[in-house]
Length: 437
Image 1 (cartoon, one colour):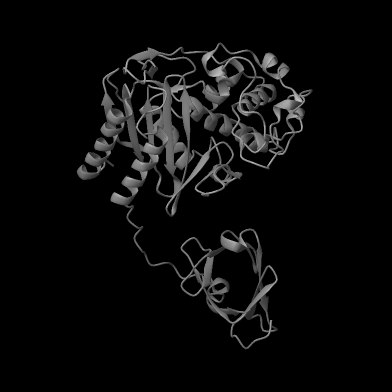
Image 2 (spheres, helix red, strand yellow; image 1 turned 135 degrees about the vertical axis):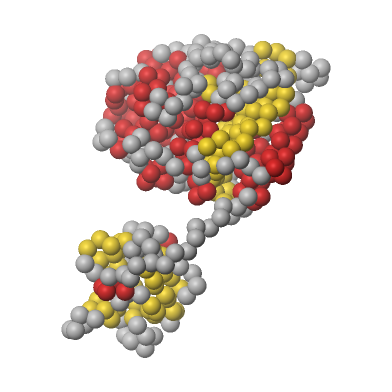
């Protein structure tokens, strides 16, 4: 569904301002809603952008590498807590785990040794691994957030060793082709935007090299378009279950580490960045390569996202492509909030479920439980339905939210088979505050 005219006008204005004030040769942005590209905003003329023009997406490539790893985990071919040595044996950093590498919690050095890998011809996996030394661990694991491109080069090597398939081929077979992302490629494919550095004093352009990064490709090699990256954003909002279980994507979006410990507005999950903006949490990633910057921000609950690209290495005057994506995503969500689903009357619940509804008491606090349309038991302190329980066996329910997520609710019955208490992880709820547990 297209944006409302006033929302579209505001989006277009923000994009035009970012391109002009940031001195970007070109800037392209797409708004995604419910799996479709709802609006495209374009600015600049070097070259004149459109939704099919390729830009380099840099580290957004990492989100795809992470999904490939999770696919292999779900298939039973690896475990997230496997040490690196299990799949790439003999390295001096082999005690680090795949989970730590995915979440930038390993403490591994940010870059491989040698020339700046983003701007130089890449080496093969054997050369990358041979360059590892114990000194590559800059911090003990889980002590700090330490972003590591090197970690994703090694994860790409793990994928190749496990599957016997080069990373680029695996990516194409397992994600790009099934999602119809035909304009997302390893090498640039015309039409594509050339990438530049803008001279700080006379505003001329210097074209940057377009390298094959070799074994570091899983960290930032890819090229894509507004239309294709919109498909990827839609996948991160609501994945195709035959490619990735929704529960696995939710697992990826749980924080592994906080990336800004002073403000607590950013973090990192298993391959995705997490951004807190007000009461909302977005997932996504930024990307940069010499001459290019890109952004991806997704609000999973509303299946709304923004993707954007520019072909200069960093926008000036305080503008930032990932920040622009978050700003416009917030604008769209505020201006056009999703309509609530209509209420519909429910069928009568089974008797053994209906008798669990109503008021229960624990430690002088009144709780209320009801049945939702899915047949789950939901409740919490009166007016705050924070808890959800799904049926597991007769008189056994499993917590699926809040403080009781994963915990067991057991129904306690009297001699007449009437429910008289709920035992929730040893906390016993009774029908009146005067009853003893």
